Structure formats: structure tokens, C-alpha cells
Image 1 (cartoon, rainbow, N blue to C red):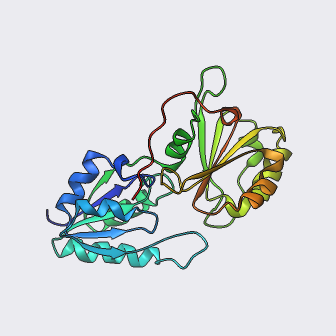
Image 2 (tube, one colour):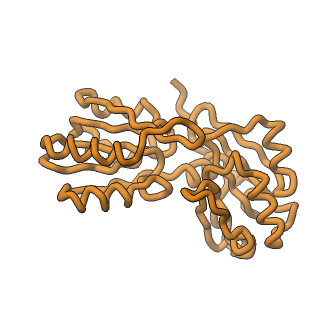
Length: 247
């Protein structure tokens, strides 16, 4: 496949959540540029590919985005089948559209392959429905970590009436709490803090908005983690939950 890059979502961690289209792309890959949060188990689908680590994690030393762009371009121009493998979904806080636009401007064909995002999988593996008839009519996905370190409009989010799923929020729990409380959200609003979504190491801490920072500290919550804030986090559904894969 000449001068083409696949931007592939590897899902939240459980390798069985990889899509068939993602497996197809990996089977064809000659170069796989992999993010830190991708479960290495998915690499069994590309045994002949060269694996290039281009990790990007908040709070850690990361591969510069400009370098990633240039590396994808170089391999694609060599006629290699390139897979840029990202945790979750490429277009949900994954810079997928940025990379696709940049490659397109340089004449490289791009194909996007969606993946299951951690916010959805983490909630499901805890028995939490992100929408629930009569309780939550919608979901809002937000990141607490912005490029310019500006604050989100937490007051508007507090009044949205939707379930809030917050990515990259572990280091900003106090800001999230204070912003939502100032916006009128109840201190008793249920919160689920979910670490390592869908992996055998997944942990969850149930709390309330006013107490979530103290509870997270006592729980020793660490990234990667997502927050589910809303009435749906009050209880778990009584359904058979997916089984976490163990090595």
C-alpha cells in the first residue's frame, strides 16, 4: 500500500476490544508507531512490522508532535504501510484530526479506524450506563488538560444535565470540583473514578463531587484514569459485565 497512513484506535486496553478493521490494518502494517497507552498485546496482529515507540503521556516526557508528523511522512514516502496506533479512539483527545490534516497537506492518503474510547469502556466495566432513560439524556466528553492550560467552562458543564466524562483529570481534581460546585452542581453528585479502564489492573473509586479529591488521595488514584460525574454513577447495573483479560 503506497504512501498511506492508517490512524488506528487500539481501544482502552482490553485487546479483545480491538475492531476487526484495526486488526486488518495491523496485519498489513510494515511500520507501527505506537503510543504509550496501547496494550502491547495487540501487537500480536503485526508480528512482521517494525515497532516505533512515539509515546505521549501527560506529565511525562513525550515525543514531540512535529517529530511524529515528520516520521509518518518519511515512512509513507518510502512506500511503507504505516499504522499510527493510538490508545482509545484517534479522534477523542487523540490528535487524530491534526495528524490527518497535516498528512493530507503533504499529499499522503490517510484512513481513520475508530476505537472504543476509555470513557465508555471504563464506565461499562464498572456497570455504569453513560445514558439512562429518565436520568441522563446525553454524555459530554471533556479533557481537564488543555493545550494552553486554560480552564474549561465548568459552570456551563454543571448546568448541562448530561453525564460528564472527564479525561486527564487526576491532577486537576480540585479545579474540577471547585468549578462544578461554583456552577451549581450538588456536592452530593455521584462520581466514579476509574483507573486503567478495561485492564486487569482496573480499579474504581465511588465518591461524591464534594469529597472526590480526598477520596482519590486515600485511594491513591493514578493516571490513566477517567471520571464519570452524574446520577448514573450512583449505582451499578445488574448485568453480566465483560471479563477482564489476564496475562
